[in-house]
Length: 362
Ligand code: IPM
Ligand code: MN
Image (tube, rainbow, N blue to C red; front, side):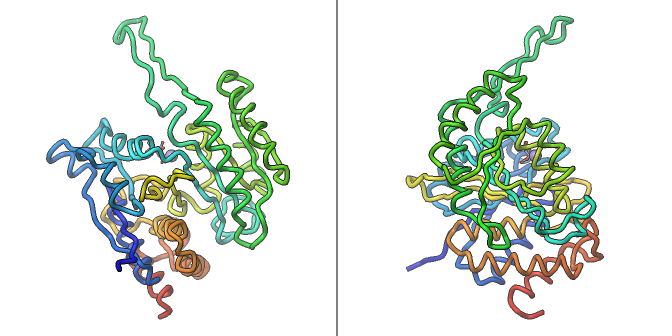
C-alpha cells in the first residue's frame, strides 16, 4: 500500500521557484513519507497560454492531493497580477481555506529589531480569516474617469465566517503549546469596532459567544491600531491572535519583522474540521516573489523550509517536522544563513546545510 502523502507543489514566480526546491530537499532529508507532483501555475504559464488556474484545477487539488505546497506569485511581466489573484486568493476562497495560520516565533535574539527581546518573548500565532472581508472583491467603480468617480470596496463579514475562524482560534489555543512546551492560554481578538461598527459589532458578539464555551482560556480584545503599537513596543504576552483578512495581512508583515523578516515567516491555509476532502490545506511562505532577487541564489529559504515543516506537522508527521525545525534553529544560531539574517551563505548553501543537518551529517 502506498502510504506516502501526495503533495501538489506549485512554486509560482520569482523566488518562489528558488526556495521551494530547498524546502523539498529538507523534507526528503527528513525521510518524510511524501511524494511530489509539480505544477507550473504562475506567470510563465500565464504568458504562454493565458491560463491562471486550469479548468478543474482546484477540484483536482482537493481530490488528488493530501496537501498543496506553494511558493509565491507576482511578476512584473503581468502588471495586473491577475494570475496571482486567481491562483493564490482563488485557492484560499474557492477551496474555502478559512483559517490562515501564521506562527510568529523568534529563533534568535539577534534576529529581532527590538532591544532586549529574547526568543521566549516572541512566540505567538496570528489566525487570519482567509475568505471574506475586503478580499471578497465585492464592489465597483462608478463614473470612472469623471470628477465624480466613486470606488466602493465592500467589507463582507458573515456570521458563519466570523464564527468558524474565532472557534478555530479557541480550539488552536486549547490544543497547541509554545516552543518551550508551556500551554497557550489567551486568545486576543483584534478589530476596529470603534470605527467599523457594523463588522466590528458582529466580531465582538461572536467573540463573546464563542469564548463563553472556553472558560479556561483568557480573552482579550485590542483595536488593531493599538495592537500594531503593542507588537513593536512589547510583544511579550501575545499568544493567539484572531482577526479579519485585511488586518491579519498587515499585522503578519509587521510580525514577520519581529522574527527576522519576511524570509523567516511560515503559513498554513486550512479548513479545520473538514472531512469531506482529502486535501488538508495550502502551505506557503509569507514572503512574496521578490522579482529583483529571483534566480540570484540570495533568497532566504528558511521561511519555505519552516512552512514545509508546518505542513508535515499537519499531515501527522510531527517528528519529521521537529527535525526540520531543529535544523533551521541550528542554522540560525550558527549563522549558516543568507545575508538578510546576518549570514554569508547563498540560498542553496543554506538549503544544503539544513538538509545535511537534518540527515545527521553535519
Ligand atoms: C499575503 C499576501 C497576499 C495577501 C497578496 C499577495 C494578495 O500579501 O499572503 O499576505 O494580501 O493575502
Ligand atoms: Mn501579506
